[in-house]
Image (tube, rainbow, N blue to C red; front, side):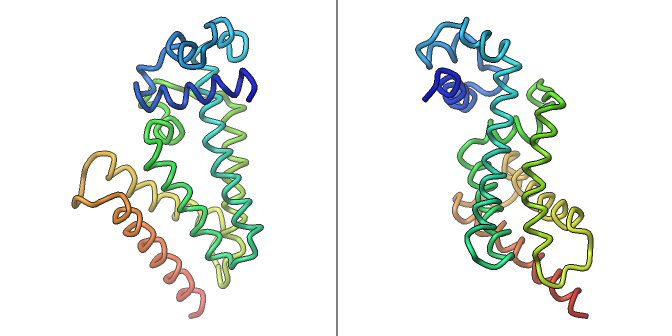
Length: 191
């Protein structure tokens, strides 16, 4: 692992332990067993480090979509696998998820380059949606609707709104909602 990768990994853990706002350059350097100079040299400070984390998260989701597409399963299975990875990120790294999907709440604004890369990774999910059989609506719209459905569930969970549920029950409930949405999409195309 390079020094840069070690710093990103340390920052990923620090934001989960301390929140995005609470993470400091000094704490990341301490966890990585490096000097703060390394953070400034590699990332120009905290904002650049957060940008790297933002990108890392979207690259993870983009890679999940690519892997699902290459798995040889159906388009529906690939969409479900990608959404499962999205939910795993939200459950296991809630601060990282918040940095990616609600950066303003963390006092962070990703660079335009980071946002472009994030959208390019999201495009991999759109490509999966394009492969769904019987899809009549624009794939970007359908992908956006699916992400909005999942994101809404995640946001409600983050606010402790709704019935209490174990993480596995919560994920199963969301996946069932996505399945229903895909079934409705298939039925409307068949009519």
